[in-house]
Structure formats: structure tokens, C-alpha cells
View 1 (cartoon, rainbow, N blue to C red):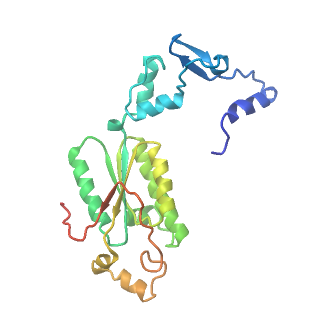
View 2: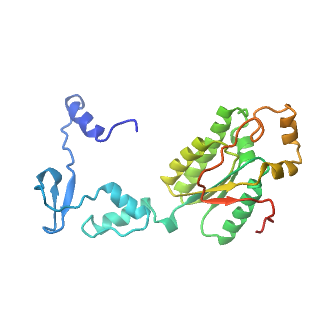
Length: 251
């Protein structure tokens, strides 16, 4: 993070004269179960049993659907927080498909899109790599830097959809682990993230290549082609791994 922990308290105290404000710092409170009361942590005697329960703990429990102890806050506060931090069954989520060119990502994504639409309980958006590049990233090249920019743009749009409790289905190549991890981190602050590695072998991908892109890359006519002269970093622990070599779309 840009600022260290509790920097806001320290800075406002330091510059209180300049901003012409009297700062009343918020003290960290802990709960004493045997006394059934809250106290400032620095007022608790050594050896006294207490429970620390921060606002972050409350938000995390709401986000993961766990109960919040009655002593932690008021029911009215919990009700308002649940509007901003929905439980897992009400959160949006992103399905992020990654794999070599020709692995079958777009086909799987379109099937998922249709299935989610049939369920009809929330909006669904398909962010196919080629379509996004044409409409949002047409000015970018296929350099490593520009491919990362394109994938990050897809990730940003997906995070906004997830934040608004929709379903985003992404199907870029997304060859680099660091970029995928960054996108996961951003999206998981708003909802679910499901990484799907479409692990179809490169030999099968080349057989499917009707445009001849692999052949052109191997002949040196295309530079920086993923899987040929630019690496594809296989996901280490995706939620789902699927090889489409012998699968039909409806499977």
C-alpha cells in the first residue's frame, strides 16, 4: 500500500494546526466477554481475556456468509453493510479462461455464456479476447507490454461487472502468471474469481488453426506468437483445468 498502517491518524495529528481541525483519534476497542463490555486495548490488564474484532473482520464475515456475534455491532449496522458487501450467493463473479491460441477458450466461454443466460438470475457479459482487442485495444500491438495492457483492461472491466453483482466471462490468452495473479487479486476484492486453464496441447491447437497463424509463426512471418517464440506460462493451481481435445462443446 502507498500509506503505512494508521498513517491517516499520524498525519492528521501532525498537521492539525495547518488544517485547523482538532483531531479526536479513534481508539482500538476490544471485547471482554466475562465483563460483557468494550474497553480500549491499552486499558486491559495483563492476563485478562479479550476478543479483538475489527471492522475488517465484520466485513469479511459478511462477505463470506458467516454469522456476526451479537456483541460485535448493532443489527442495523449489519443490515446496511450487507447491502455493500453481499454474501457469496449474491456476489458477482468472474470466470477467467486462459490457454494457448486455438485451445478452445472462446467456444467454452460461449457455452458458459448461454448456460448462465438460461439461468436468468443475473446479468452476464462475455469478454472474448479478440472482441475486446478490436473494440478497446485496437491501437495496441502484440508486444509483451501491450498484451499485458489488453489483459489488464479485460480484468478491469470484469472487476466492475463483478462489483455490480454480475457475471463476467473472460477468454483471453493471458499468457503470464503475474498478470493473471494481479487480475485475480483485484477481482477477489469484489466477488468470486474462477480461473479455468484450457489446457489443450499445442499439437491439437495447431491442427485446429484454420488461419495458419502457427505455421506463419514457425516460418518467422509472425513474431512474438504465444506458444511458438513467446512463452505461455501454465497456471499452477487453477480452479478448473480442461483439455478440449476430445470434448464436444455441450460436454
